[in-house]
Length: 248
Image: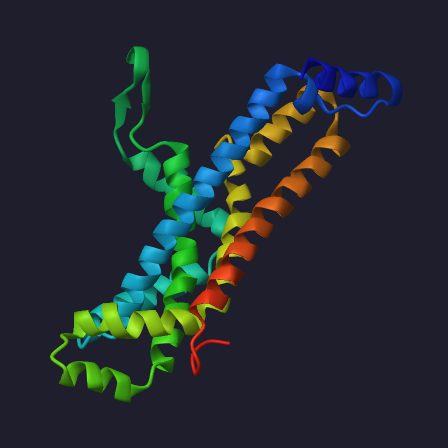
């Protein structure tokens, strides 16, 4: 591996192309940690946004107008405001109201970390879109199917989980994939509250080494690969779940 690292060091000395994330152990470690942080942040946001979407879509079908109104307020609030503003609201607004706890070595620290606030804000943001996506999928399921489930003794919750949701999921999967891709790209906003994700550590690296063009190219390629893997996985899943009469 030393030969490989020295090759990129020689590349820098001979051409000026400075890829410190390869030949410098410190920058390489920082960059790898940033990639891991971005992946973990993306997976966490995707998971919780899906949960919010499923619960919100189920509540929209409630018999109580109060729950429907609450869900609609949530959707309009988070769909019609910028995600960066929402992140600042949670981090600087709500976070300032929470007590400070004693951390490691007795140093005071916020009760909720910047990473957690990023997950909360982005999950709520994407979840608002997921609610509408799942709602459209549920409405595409024929009422006769729901009536048949009820005739077989299924409760509303059981019919939703075992009958409606699997069929609705197939219908809304293309739209859901698009929202998930946008969410992964939106995780770069966590840079604004000092979450050490990919963009944040890349900025630190190019500030230390003045290699902005190289790091921007690497950053673009890494996100292209990450999003490409997500799109490939979701497309493969969509093909496997496809049923005649449902989905695209």
